[in-house]
Amino acid sequence: MAMASTDLDAFRREARTWIEANLERRTSRSAAVSAAEARTPEEIAQSRQLQRRLFDAGWAGISYPEDYGGRGLTEAHERVFNEESDQYLTPDFGAVGLVTFGPIGRSMLAHATPEFLQRHIPKMLAGEALWCQFYSEPEAGSDLAGIRTRATRDGDQWVIRGSKIWTTGAPNADYAMCLARTDWQATKHRGLTWFAVPMTAHGVSVRPIVLVDGNAGFCEETIDDVVVSDDDIIGRVNDGWSVAQTMLVYERRAGEGFSVAEPREIAPDLVSLARKANRLNDPIVRQAIARAHINDYAQHHLGKRLFAVLSTASSPNPAIAAYIKLAGGVLVPERVRLAMEIGGPDALAWDDDDSQGSQLAAEYLTGRIASIGGGTNEVQRNGIGERVLGLPREPSFDSRTPFADVVAASRNWNHRVG
Image (cartoon, rainbow, N blue to C red; front, side):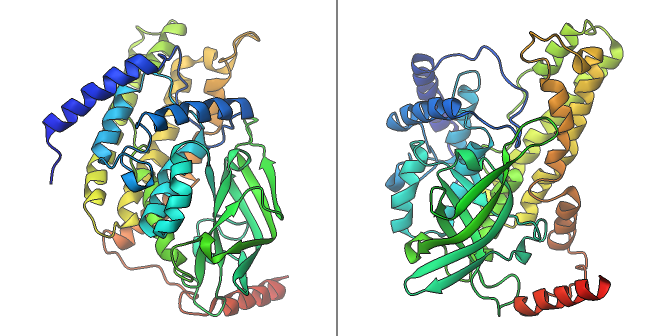
């Protein structure tokens, strides 16, 4: 049933009153939160305090169930609060916050036991527990089902051993949601299980990966005989691919909080940039700003429309969410390219005392992350073609073979090639 507009209007007034009385207005804003942008321990600590304030007042986890510390309202209510708080200082955990409250939290709600949720979700919403994803591996990126991290049962415990890479925000996380292979005789999409792994567990080591812009928000991890229990399982043993499908819906920016905010002004960051470069009256620059605004507007409404479709589906199709991921992968690099054109020399050189001077150049260097991380544009197009448009699937030689045999065959093939 559609949410009555009067209910949302009353909620908006309530939210606006609380926000104006309890939050500070922003004095500046970064154009985007980069997945590679790390937060300092001091910034994380400040955001934890602010998150706790929201939680205690009932404004954290607005669409999360009341049983687990949320407010039990709808995603539409959450969107209203985000719109009203857009100009105010809210918790900024960087990308680890987006991962925690988006794909991880939502996937837990869909698959974890009530006991697991009661232990973890309230701490998450209160800012006491941030999460990262132990997901991709050096030998399994876009082919996520090819992971080789192993979880072996030992009595009533599990011992996990392997490695992960491209983990967002691991140094700031308290837990990891870790995908491991629990049955090597099953096919590659079976025999997978998700575990909750404390980042402080003996055997977990984290190494930052420094990117071209100097940020180290991505990391590589070694998991060396980490011990967890059945209570740490998310979903069912050997059914991890079902959890992964849910996670992909939200990771591909179909979940609330991942879509582009509705543009209320014409690309204010680009207008400010054009003014700084003294090019605001340049017709070419004005066209570039208009094009960016149109793309922002289209991206917002694409996300809004597809979210409505996904929120009413009993079993959301991750390939539908791929439309939003693909839109970001195409339009984010285009937007940072337009910004470089608008800024001209001011985007390439800056004074030593300009603390924000390097931001645009760094965003340009990392702009392609959106077209690669979380699945490349090509992977999204394949998923849309095969699972939405019904085009023939690409041939697969390993989808019906026990994964242990797949690995053995690949080693033999590499030996013959070598």
